[in-house]
Image 1 (tube, rainbow, N blue to C red):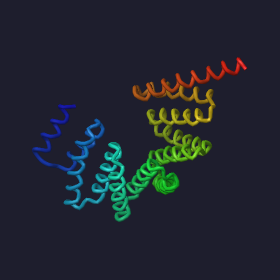
Image 2: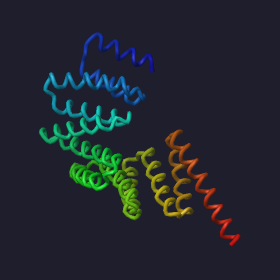
Image 3: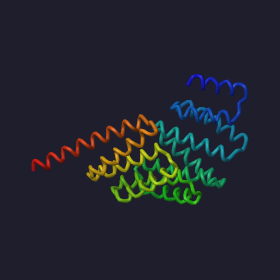
Image 4: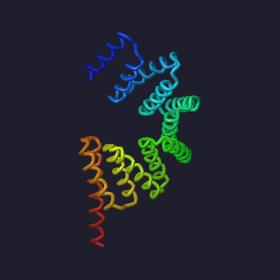
Length: 241
């Protein structure tokens, strides 16, 4: 980590290239160095504005919105996301526009405005479908599932999760497949369909072990243990009655 940072900083000290700073910002964000990543993306944004590079400018603003959202700074994230959305509209950047709509939908979910979130996600999904972006479609279906789940429309939530799962399988995104299976299990769990929930958590563990996703494997195993405990308790109560 320290060696990589030192290498990036040495390159930037020698020549402040936008591509190097962008790569450095992406590295920091991935490493969880959120505040430092924000500082680097702010410099990328200033360089993009000076060089009149609208697509890079929109991307930098979008990444800043995501990072502020990760820090729980939702008001700042919303302002930045709307700015990114306006840039996408002005310059007809369809991919960026869809991402902005999806991220604004996430902000709307956090704010409890489920109707707005659903509307934004459907608009984003239409753009992602037109662009044939499987990853974008899968993300929108996953977020639509959250909206429907919060609305207690579990049938629609499960339908959206199955669409997301199908797309992630086509992309061979093992980590995302595992997350979809865990979310499906959770949807069955809230409906007290314990057997179905248990089998999906078991499948999620097996899938995630292929990717060696330790954090998600731990979560899936904990959920599986709890689901089994509840199912066994209910079976015991049924026998007593």
